[in-house]
Picture 1 (tube, rainbow, N blue to C red):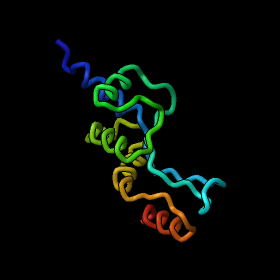
Picture 2: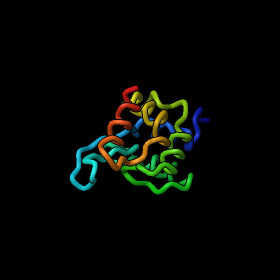
Picture 3: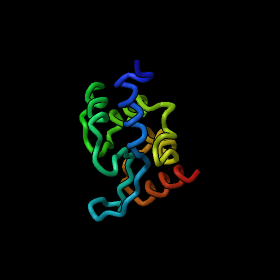
Amino acid sequence: MPILNEEDRNLILLASNIKGDIVCQRTKSRKCGYLIQPRLWFSNRMPQGVKSILESKGIEAKMQYSSVEEITKILNMITGLEELSSNPNGLATLRLHYAQIQQPKTHDDVIRVLSMLDG
C-alpha cells in the first residue's frame, strides 16, 4: 500500500512546480508606466497531476494566475509545502502582500507599492 495517495502526490507536484511573486513590469499601456500584480505561474508545461488537483478544487488549469481568489485557493492548498518550489522566497513575498497590492494609477502609487515590498 502506497504511503501517499494520489491527491497527496498531486499536491506535492503542484507545490514543486509552481512559482510566485509580486511582478513589476514597465508598460506603456498603464498611465503610471508600470504593471504591478501578484502572480503564480508554471515555467514549462503543467504536469497532468497538477491539472487534476487544481480541477478537483474548482480551479481552472492554466499556466498563470493573477486573481486574488485563485491565488488564495492555491496558496491555501500548498501551505507548508512552499519550500518544495524553486522559488520559496517569491511565494513568501506573495503570501505576505498579494491581498494588499492594487494596480497603481499614479507614479506616487508605484513608489508606495514598491516601498511596501521593500520594507
